[in-house]
Structure formats: C-alpha cells, structure tokens
Image (cartoon, rainbow, N blue to C red; front, side):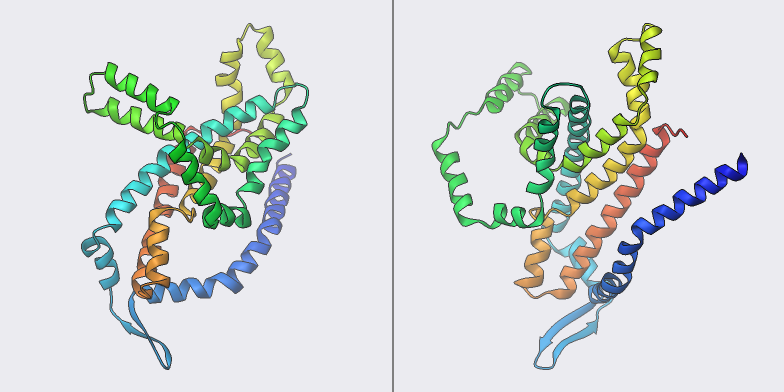
Amino acid sequence: MRKRKVGLTKRRALYGYVFILPFIIGFVFFMLKPLYQSLMMSFSTISVGPNGFQAVRSGWENYKRAFLIDPEFNRMLVENITQMIYHSLATIVFSFFVALILNQKFKGRALVRSIFFLTVILSSGVLVGLEYNNTMMAQLKETIEESGNANSITTVIENILLSNTGGMAGPGDKMFKILFEVIDSIYDVAMASGIQIIIFLSGLQNISPSVYEAADMEGCTAWESLWKITVPMVSPLMLVCWVYTVVDFFMRTDSQIMKKIEDQLSIQLNFGFSSAMAWIYFVVCMILIGISSLIISKVVYNYD
C-alpha cells in the first residue's frame, strides 16, 4: 500500500510538471532575459542617444528616489495594498457564495453558469482594452453620470447610517466607507470573479453527497453543514483562489501605480526609475502573497 501510494504521488507530481512545462519553457526562453535586463536597468541611469541606449550604473539611486523623493509613490503603494486586501476578500466571498448557488439543482442551471463564466471572456485582454481605451464608451459613461441622479441608493444608505452614528470619525466610520466602496465596485468584483467561481464550483462538485446525507441523519442543519463540511472541504481551493486574486489585482492596468510606471517609461523616458518602481511593486506583491499564503495555509483543512 505504501509503495502504491508513493507511486500515485509521483505520478500526480509528474502530471503536474507536464501541465506546467509549457509555461516553464516560455518563461526560460522569453521572460528570463527581459527580467534580468529590467533588474539591471533599475540600478542604472538610462539615456537614449544616437547610438541607442546607454546605461550608467547608479546603484540604489532609483530606489531611493521612489521611496524618499517621489511624493506620490509611497501613497499610491499603500492605497493599492489597502484596496487589494478588501477587494480580494470581497472577490473570494462573492465567488464562493455564487458557486454555492450555482451548485444547487434548478432549471436553467447551465445557462446561469454560462452567464457567470462570461465575466472571464469579458475581462480578457481585447475587451478590457475596448472598455478602458474606447473614447465613445468613456463619453457615454460621463453623460450617464451627469444626467443621472447624484444620490444613488448606496449614497443615501451611507448617509443615513453615518448620520445615525453621529458622524464620529473612527474605526466604525472607516469600515462603513470601505463596505460601501466595495458595494459601489461590485461590477469590478463580479468581473474579477469568473475563474474563482469555476474553481470553487469544481471543489463543491467533488464533495461526496454521502457526507451531507450522513450529516442530515445526525440532525445537522444546513448552516452547520456549510461551516463543518463545505468550508473545510473547499478550504485548499481558497488558498489557490486567494493567490490568483491577488496576482490578478496587482496586474490591473488601471491602477495608479501601473499608470505611473507606464508614464515614466513611455512618456518621461525614465527607464531606470520605471524599472525600479516595477521591481518594488513586484517584490511587495510577492511578500504579500507569501505572508497571506502562510496565514491561510495554517487554517486550511488538508485531506487525502
């Protein structure tokens, strides 16, 4: 039995390496050299002359400029990390409960699943470019906002709740503002949750119905089954979805830091400074993924 288990483990690991082999090959041949060049550029001052690019070593000057001189980078970095935390949490919660609904048996389930999977297609590269770079769509959005009622439902509810709390500034006030900011950005949350819904749905379908039948025979309620069976069984997928959501959020091209990096690169032609900010952004992303993954892995229920 032990030899059979070891053989099965090695076989699964081999299958995993085969699936990621195209990415490894592409990374080595197409991404490794540009990453190295970008790292070297972050420690250099790049000038463009008649003979092409000329790099002069400047040490940590670009990084010092990003942290100590630039008046916007630190603020943008903190704001982006804060937005990432509550936006990613909202995306995970939204994806999980939508997957719970889609896992139920009802008429038209295949159609509803297809509708939610459309968010993956709509958030693909070409359509995102049309959404953010289409002048007509931008003008139409501004016209709707100008002609619409300035007091939306969420704004009215927010004013009522804040007035009932006496308008006192504190943790409660900040939590209310974050909550309503998430509600106002429900479109972005839904657009970013397509892959997570599919992952959670696949995990829910792998749970044996006999487990729920045994729980029902023992008098377990639906709420207790959710927290005692469903959540522990899909908890390993929560770690996968969290890492994917964080990486997807940091790769958003409409974030302030990404726009600043792009402006410094393409408009200001500060290649070294742009590379330094990009590497800081990358390292911060990796650190946050590592810390959050370590925390989540402590509460993940692992089973064979």
